[in-house]
Length: 582
Image 1 (cartoon, helix red, strand yellow):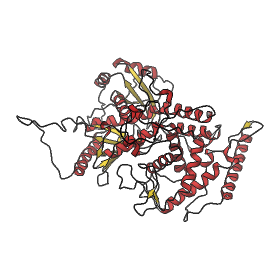
Image 2 (tube, one colour):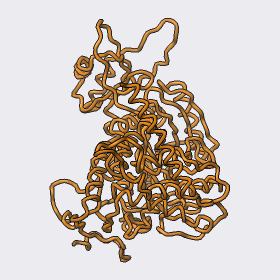
Image 3 (cartoon, rainbow, N blue to C red):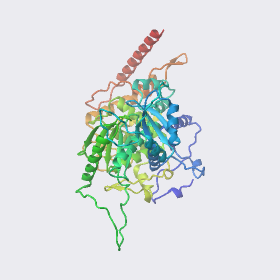
Image 4 (tube, helix red, strand yellow):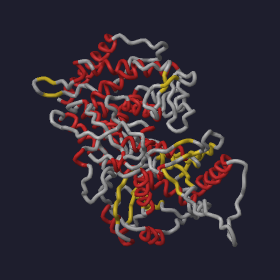
């Protein structure tokens, strides 16, 4: 195998490539194939799996592996710049709609969805097509209201003809209810299939990802009135690969793309520079910019409601609801460390499809039992939970993903990044990251995750994905998870003892449930399967673990009695439905 061209530093990486011998490992292969099919639907890229010896050095004419984070962002932003958002009547003829728009250019992609009405996202072949379409649009005339004459790519379609057409086919923008998810999981054949099914049901779709970038692009059009060369990018769950349908849209106003920065001043002769306002701190600049942009969004942004300027927070932001998309939005500026964290999570998710599947499963389990919450408080955050999953995968033997220090050692000069004194450097070229061969199934990983944290020494140790090993706590806190880049910070500082105790108790219960014969396999009579909850589905049923005051291990018979009673109640409910149907 060719390692010489991939090594960067004199410090040898412990991650080496092994050929995956697939004989006798059909369960893992089927699991990975199923998970990869799932992610092709959402990411718009081929997810990276463990490289094998046979794929190295082959020239297929195409770039191997997934897109880099920057390539993905650039592609999505380009799509958004060529797209428009149109409010439609539900009985609009799709064929007439497309024929009408095609007068202005070729349409590359379109889809419909519902949010305070029916909307269409339409991507044209080039930006000139969008300009042509906007030039044909009229300013609405109303007698009893005054209009703010701000033109944007958010439009309304008026149908001046009579007659109705079939309802437009709308793409889902929210996750399925938990009861429906449990029924869906109960029909699967294995825990691995259950995990893949949950991931497919919860992850962002291709359409939802496009919509998020389009909303950012529409907001950029507003900010460009003051900063013509700025960009607004999504970060966090919207782009790191771990976003759930319906999650908030976090946006970053990027002013670093403005030209004229870091130009060399000539040693002699004449030169010009812009006159600009000066202030006492970068934080004050950020607050001033967001204050003005927030005012513009509030007064001029079509569909933007409930605008709040939260400028004294640790990270100043503007919060609002974008009704046409249905997204709750947070706009920040000067938040480059958060963007690097987003890129790091994206990289980890692309390295092995099991990473995302396990994160989605643990997050769903945590939200179902109230371990995480959308309301600020003492709960474990989704980011903290994701870091805990990554740390667990680093601790496998052999590790499934490398440590952040390993990724830093593989970085090249172009990868170097120091933000506000924090080392945010890590490799971005997937071909340099060589993984060890780990064949653990998703079922095994799920069970071991619960066992790992059911016995983790939280009272003494800190979680650190930079080193990939436990470290002594540097501060007194129930849960300490080191921020990957701002290493002096604890990302779980908000978590109190009772919430951590409850997490541990639920891990103990879930690990025990997955080991019970009555719930670990699907059941049926006479070869006919039933839809009784089993496997992962049982973990999403209501738990008896409430406000735990002490970290005491629950007795197995309590959980056993709970499962039996739940199964009996579900059986009675199914029998009652059959009788009513007959």
